[in-house]
Image (cartoon, rainbow, N blue to C red; front, side):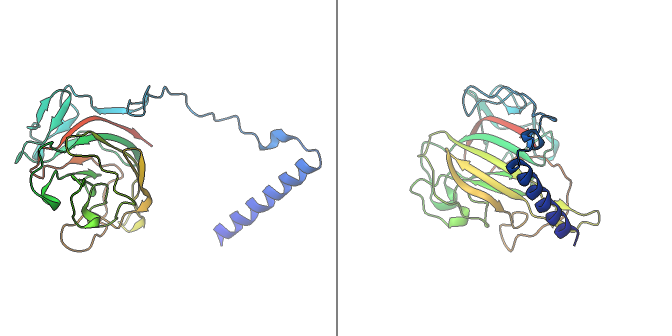
Length: 247
């Protein structure tokens, strides 16, 4: 009832404003000056971090990351990129994030080994739970909800925009964290938009729940902000130029 009342009042106010304009009313009645959007400096390219972003990896060190169980990061660092070291475990951001805009660039090995899920496999775990899949999906058949840019075992990407092995690729992600009540009941699902190499592949899609390899995804209550993790799936996948804007 409250929502219907608000909608009704909003409609009446809009109609009154339109009537005032038609009758020669003041156009300033529909102009908003305060608050004004904050001024930031955008990057010189789409990949460059804007001035209000948190730079998570600039190619120099692992200062913003921690390894499994709080260990130091054991991945390889070379030529401005970090690369998965097989068996060293996933790495996670030291900071925690909820709603965000994330930019990340990644590359699968130039030498093709294996097929399906055994080829250039890694993943980005938003809030440590919701996996955006990384995979060499260039001429590589696998299940559709497990290919690159899928929400793993859940959402199939709209198209396959993958570049070839050894080529740098990018994800630009808009993520809305799920909401939970004080007693842990889910109030709204997480949502995600993904642009893969400049192509929209997930369009404000609702995530079913935490990623599961076996079984159905489901939601379990967690904090409003959680670390982001990058997966060690055994393949030497590389990452560079990672930045995030908390929203």
